[in-house]
Image 1 (tube, rainbow, N blue to C red):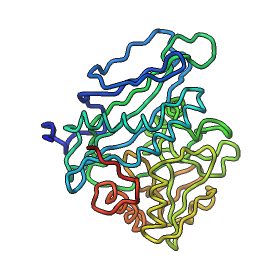
Image 2: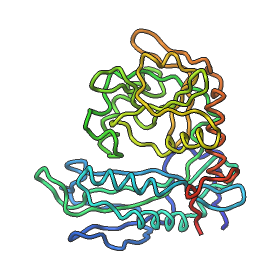
Image 3: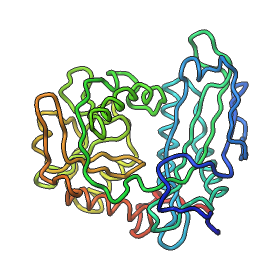
Image 4: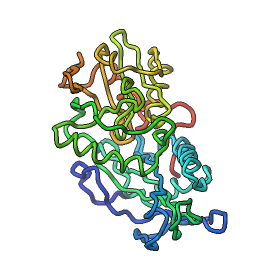
Length: 341
């Protein structure tokens, strides 16, 4: 497959139109078969459910060119399951998980020329999403929905390497107890926009959100889970019913325990104990792991021993191992890599 003539080293993390996308509609109580289209535009009624009551959800995953030239996706089955769970919580009809994976593969195959070459630092970002499409004026779920997937090549999340970032403890709450923090609903991200703009305006890269009930426990950022490393090398991730179950985080924890032989803990993490950790990072699809060098809060700051120059040693080992699996340099656990053929 001949690649598009794109300066892969210079593209940013943004939208680039590709050739094909997948569309399927839900009407009369059933999903249609759906298929690929060249039309990137969506035409909606002014009273569509998504426009009135934000009934929408999405996923994010990537396709890569491996070291031996294959085109692959990373654990799309977990994206399919998470979107299924999100749809149920939002009273939307789940798109069948097997059809989800088939559609992802079809979109990647149709846009394979946009999958960046191995070693470029770039990837093909895949965005499945679903929304209520018919007119809804009373507060209730829509009757009709559209499921779509588009793909766009994106550059490396970090230009010039993954330098540790400085974040701040947010004065805002991300998600309420028994709310929607555990699903990938568009409304969660809309609610976080003011907080992230505020953080950026104050010179911080991201927010640390604490639990809304007690404001004593670490939850996540607006778009990533936390990873901490203790001084004795244990990998710790916060546990809460309000945290989105990150596929990257779950993969990192598996790699830590079963590939690298590290001790792992998935448990509640109090803000009080954060100062005692040796390393901190944010994990998600976009950057895999973003190292955190400093956390600023109202009464002071926490500077991690790993410093502001580079990833801590354990975080770096986790990053190198997981990206090695994704890019085909290391053997993957069974089922993690789906080849596009």
